[in-house]
Amino acid sequence: MAAPTAPVGPLTVGQLYTDAAGFVEYTPGTAPLVLVAPHGGTLAPSGVPDRSCGGCVTAADLNTQELTRAVADTFLARTGVRPHLIINRLHRRKFDGNRDRDEATGGTRALDTTWLWMHAAIDSARQRVRLASLRGLLVDVHGHGHDIPRLELGYLLSATSLRQDDASLTATAAMGASSMARLASDARQPGDRGVALLRGPNSLGALLVARGVPAVPSPTDPAPRTGDDYFSGGYNTERHGSLNGTALDAVQVESHFAGIRDSAAARGAFAAKLVDALLVFLERHYGWTRQP
Ligand SMILES: [Zn+2]
Image (cartoon, rainbow, N blue to C red):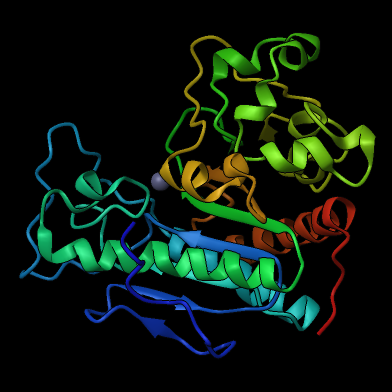
């Protein structure tokens, strides 16, 4: 198995690192929270060909880079502890930070090193969490253009799966195939395990709804209805979540635009609510509280 090409460490917390081309950046933290913005890039250097793969999505998730930075800044300001931050600076028509290598690069081999570097950075973040004997959460930050203005929380379970009732999901061990597989089996409070992590009272969806941000799945909106558009997660949640029993669980957070990421004020307000929810989540499920 080829060794990852870059971030392994020792790395300096709070220092900005980039790949050689400056297309992807990583700022290491010490909190068990890894923030990734794979689709919010704006750089479009003429020397990098546009991705030409058939069916490739090339539309960026507008303002999600700024949103992710706001979440990182807010978390640091609230706690004095820095989360890990990984940003793809390239526009999605050049590079997709949430796809396997061929689709991410569109076959532009010069971007292979960027792709390897980005995932090596996430691997390094997870390693730091693990070496600190911590467990934590990776949040892959996206934006959707769907009709219903609500967060779509993706755990690798399809809308069809989510439309099953809790008993059916439990009977089929659905959470074992989710990006929260490990936490679903061993959350600190037994009542939070399994399907409760999707839409129970201490799920991320519940914590966000309680702060005025609509979200699916959540206790009040347990599943997308038939015909609703819904993103269930992607490459990053699958590769970097806890399907393989690693130290990080993962969730893909797809946000609507208006009032969430359309202005700096909206991003700041939403970041405050998301950080508030994440702090409760990290303490409740992983036992982590701010320890500068
Ligand atoms: Zn996206």
